[in-house]
Image 1 (cartoon, rainbow, N blue to C red):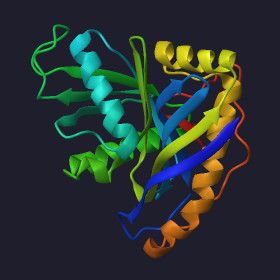
Image 2 (tube, rainbow, N blue to C red):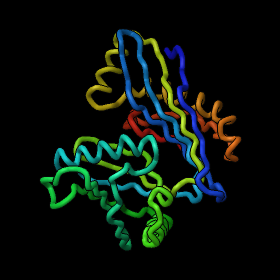
Image 3 (spheres, rainbow, N blue to C red):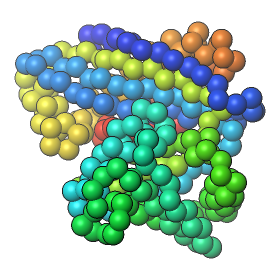
Length: 258
C-alpha cells in the first residue's frame, strides 16, 4: 500500500524556440530500499517535448568488463539527462537501406580487451518504416554539420540485461520537465521480500507493484508539473491513461510511458 510520495527536485527548461510536436514521458526507477515492511522507491520523471516524432532502438552487446563499465556510465547519466556523458562520443552513425550501425567511444577508460584503442560499444538498428530511415538520415546530416550531439539526439530507455544493451534514440527535444523524488509504501512481509529480491537480482519489480508505482508517480508528477512548465512556455504534461504492464513487462530503470 502506497503511503506517500515526495518530490525532491523540479526543473524545466526550453532548449530552442521550435514548434512542439508531442510529449514523451519516461519514468526511471533509480533505487529501491526495503527495510522490513517499508519500501522506498527513488525515481526520476522526465517529460520531453519533441520537435519531431519518432525514435530508433539501438541494440548491442557488452563483451567485457570495460565495456560494461562504459555502458553503466552511459545508462546512469543518460537516464537522468537524456544526453551522453562527458567523455563519451558518438563516433559512428552509418545508415544503410534497411539497417544502421552506431558506435559509442569513451577515451577516458583503459584499452578494452575486446578491441583496440579506446573502449567502443557497437549498436545496430533496423528500420520498421520509412520514417525511421528518414530520421536516421536526418541525424547523420546534422552530425555532418558538426552540430552539438546533445542538440541533435535525445537518449531514453537505456538498459543493460546481461550482455545485451539497448538505447532508444529520439530527436533532441524543444524543452524538458524533470522531477525526482521518492515513493513510500508499506507492504506485507512476502511482498516486501519479493520486491527486495527482484530489485537486487535483476533491477526489476513485481508487475502488480510496478503498476501501482508507475501510475502514482505519473499522476503526481503530471499534475504538479502543470505549474512548473508555465514560465518556460511548455505545454502542461497531460496525464496519459492508466499504465498496464504486459506479461513480459516489469518496471526497471528507464521504463517508458507514452
